[in-house]
Length: 203
Image 1 (cartoon, rainbow, N blue to C red):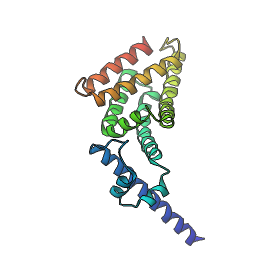
Image 2: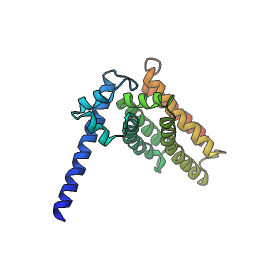
Image 3: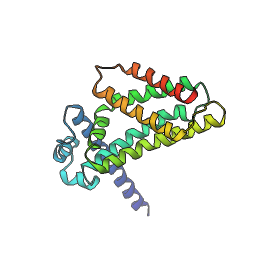
Image 4: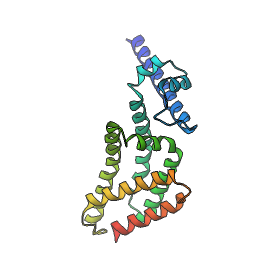
């Protein structure tokens, strides 16, 4: 039994290491200018130091790879958004910190986030996946607005619609800031979003 457990642990560790190498290789190649549409499995596998056959052992296809990468980044984004969702201090300060940190993650993982948004425009499975991830932010934002209404701090008439509009506004703003960074500074985008959220929820 102990021997079987050791083998299982070794296999799990190897799988994690290979997957991490593939994910890192993909981000590196995207950072170097490769488009996701033109990025081949062979090239990803070679950069990761594995065979093409090994790639397919861990990932069904390039779509699954992209979604797995995006899930990892989304977990980081959710952690930062929770600064406001679960906070009980000054909402303006909390929102500003959360939106600043989220903007930083968008900048850090720009190549990946650009890729998933662009692929979502022509791949329906990825589009549904991306909408589902953003939906987590919408639902948590709606819950926070409802709590603010219950506490008498907000008179927002429709928390659901408001959360939907505000969340997708952040997604669109930060995506466009990535691809048109010469048009607007990141700190200016954060301040504008903070002001809009506060005025909308706490007016």
